[in-house]
Structure formats: C-alpha cells, structure tokens
Image 1 (cartoon, each protein chain N blue to C red):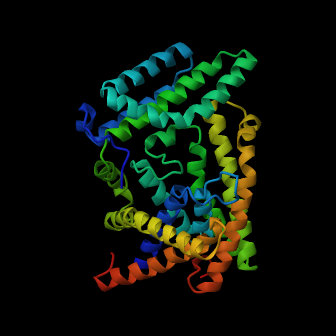
Image 2 (cartoon, helix red, strand yellow; image 1 turned 180 degrees about the horizontal axis):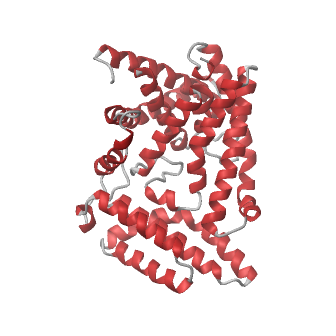
Image 3 (cartoon, one colour; image 1 turned 90 degrees about the vertical axis):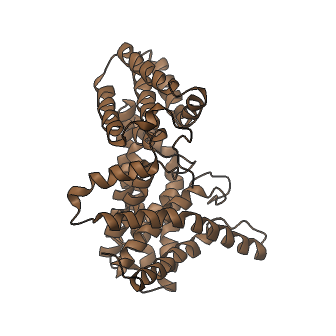
Length: 197
Length: 180
C-alpha cells in the first residue's frame, strides 16, 4: 500500500523520527501560543521555507493535502471579513502552518520509523499492551485492507449480477460478517502456529 | 487472546475500507462517507473495549502516515486540522456505542441503533464541535452550525449500524461480542 511518505528522500528523511516528532510537538504548541497575525505570518513563512527546502516536486506534493483545509479557510475568511475582525488572519495562518508542519514530518518519515517511535512511546505500557501483540495487530490491519477491498468489490459485483439497482449499503452486513469470520479463521491459524503472547 | 487481536485488527481494516470505497453512496445523491459507520460498528459488534481499541489502532496507522481517512487523507496533518475533534471522538464514540449495547438489554437492533446514535452522532459531534471551536477560534454555537449539515447523514448511519448489527446477530449469534 502507498504511504504518504515522499518517495524521493530529501535532507529531512535523514533526521531521526523521534527528533522530528518532538520538534513538531514543540512547534505546534508554539503556534498556539502566538496571538498576533504578524508573528504567525513569520511562522507560516518558516513552514513554507521548510516545505520549499525539499525542492519543487516535494513542495507540490506537500501542497496537495493542504487542500482539505479550504472549506475552513473560506468559512473563517468570510466570517471575519463580514465582521471586519482582523483576528481571522491569525486563525487561518495558524491552522495552515500547523497542518503544513505536520505534513512535512509525515512526508519525510518512513512508516517503519514512525511505527518504531510508536512502539517506543508504548513501552511504559508494555505489561498491558505488549509490543509484539501491537506489531502483529498493525501488520494484520495493513495486510487485510487490500484483502477486504477485494472482497467488497466481489460482493458489489455479485450484487450487480443479480440486480439492476446499485448495491449501496446492502453489501455492508456481508462485509462486516466477513471481517468477523476472517478474524476467527486468522485467530485459529495463529493459535495453530504457536499463538500470540 | 488471538481472537481479540485479530478482531481488533480486522475491524480497524473495516473502518479503513469503509472510508476508501467511493462506490457505496449510502443514499443516492447524498455524498456521505461510511467511515463513521465503521466506527459505530466497531462498538456495536465488538463491544466497548475491543471496539474502542480497534478505532485507536486505525488512528495510530493514520498518524503513522497511511492515507486511510475518507478522501485519502492521513498523516499527522489531519491531527492538526480543525476536524481533529472528530478523530479524538472516534474511539469514544465506539466506546459509548458498545457500552449501550452491552448494558441496555433490549432487542439487539434497537440497542445498536441507540448506541450508534448516542456514541456516533451525539457524543462524536459534541467532541467534534468542541475541536472546531478551539481550532477555528469560534464560539460553540458558531462551530455547531458547521456540523449541522452532516447530522442527517450521521443519523442515517446510526440506523444502518442498528440494522447491520441486527443481521449479524441473526447470522452469527455467538459472534456478537457486545452481547457476549
């Protein structure tokens, strides 16, 4: 499956994942501490510079996920222009910078490194949530997403072979049931091979 | 033990594919994603604890950089966006939905609908609206206006969650963990 990591490494891919995540946490707290639009504009320029440092292709790929913010930007802008309240600029700059910085970390960190950090963070809870069990659950989920997508497609085709109407939600009970049945079978297979501790 | 791990993992995958399948438009003409329906089903089928864990696992994979949210969104950015409240609310919604099905000893379909409505519509939207109000610097009623257009779709999903859970209860009476 495709991840959101940018495939061609830039300089930030070499920075350890834990460091990037800690810096992101601090930067996000900082963004929410800033109040004035001028300070936030400088922060937004910093985020833009960071994104641009990856080259043109990287910057273009980084802009795409920011598009999900446009309804919020439009609503806040319309609202504050209508009220003639300049605070809207600060809200928009903070929102876009925070999301851009977070996307930068996601785009420059491989899935395995990110999962390594998650396992490190979960280490204090090792008694309740042992790392091998969590790793197994994550691997199972990642593996079963394409399997279940294929199954959903099969179910939809089986429906279309029998009915002129679109399948819509009618395949969902079968899909949910398949997830339950698969879970039973995979659990039996795991137990037969020594089980999970 | 193996079974709870595989159920949590496979229901996390179920949430993901309900967000990825564009072909299922629940009611024609109303573009609503089935992702939060998956969250409701985690609670009503797996019960409060396992359901919430399945949703947490799904969110961990999203945060790790998999584009599993509806519309192919994912990564850390979505946790910094104004809709972060809905993501935080997802596991709580599954927890509440599962808790209702486990405690209210009425018909499975009705209990699952009530759980999905309370958890996946009421609680989820309250947390989501608080999140938007904080992230957008708006008052709670103003943020609630932004959520209002989605309430109809959410209610339809709660009905579907009730119906699907009921049919699961008929087909696999012993598999419904929320009524173990």
